Image (cartoon, rainbow, N blue to C red; front, side, top):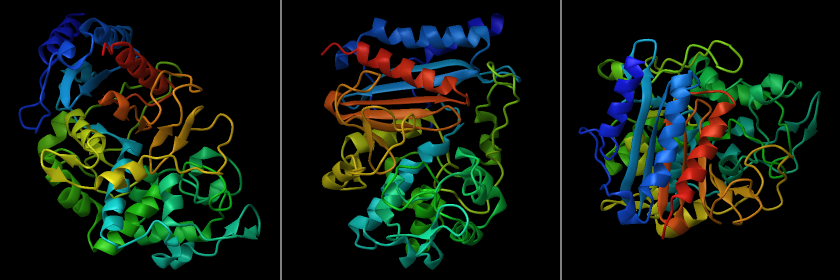
Length: 412
């Protein structure tokens, strides 16, 4: 109980601050940007209750409106087993929140004329050209997958952990698993020997597509994905703690999950971010902080620019965050969920209604399997980042909690 009280006091102390080492967005009181302090405090109360009940190790929430951080809450423990309290500079495994960063890198190359979204993937990797679809001998693809298919998850590729069919068994289980076992070339070779689950362009299927994109960025740029992102994205945005491996000097800032899932009792094991990978997987291998990611999200909200640094043009961001599914089918019950289409690595809300959670037409975002999420609402001039290391079904509940509470706190 003493530790918990210390944690709650610490959370209040850091409510409107960012770690001193990081470039921050300007800060404001909630009411100065049209938000209710009382409404936002509901988020912290719920998260703190879950920390106290043992359902959550810790979390960080950042809410920025009109370009200013109005709410920053650090709750619970960075490492509960070690008794280390959560602090705003904690480093998180962000899993699939790596994907939007790779999409930005891809669109940079697009703006420079070094690739087109209509390019067949076989232009870069012949092994991913004419492939077969379905089990057994399958059938030939009616058309080849394109870079646009990779960006919107209509390539026909999948993850091995998304099913138990013969086709699923041909794939690596996940990005994190494959990047520890395979080099980038071996990864592409393995995909080239697999069957596609669907014909390219016909069905939204969450997949290893963004890992292939990351390799394309490497082929075109002549750099590793981490080098390209550091030079072209992270440095201009003044974000210092995002990348594919955590240095020894930062080991003590890595956030850790609970030892076991509170619902199933199963042991929780996450990848060790201190261990270098055989290739830097664009689909889910990066680490970041709440402060870093909110700057990245604010750049997206600002249509490609932040603090004088322009990464992408306004129309490119509009294109990237539009719904690109067209006639592609989303299976009932699958992501991105009712009322949402899909852009380039982000779910995009089609209408204010239909979805089972409040929001604005045109809002977009995505989350990571280890408990992180972000979303951007251009109509409300709003960016929100939630960081935890809470894999399992409860991560969806936290995303819903944060979004509903933030939107309910809007006063103008």
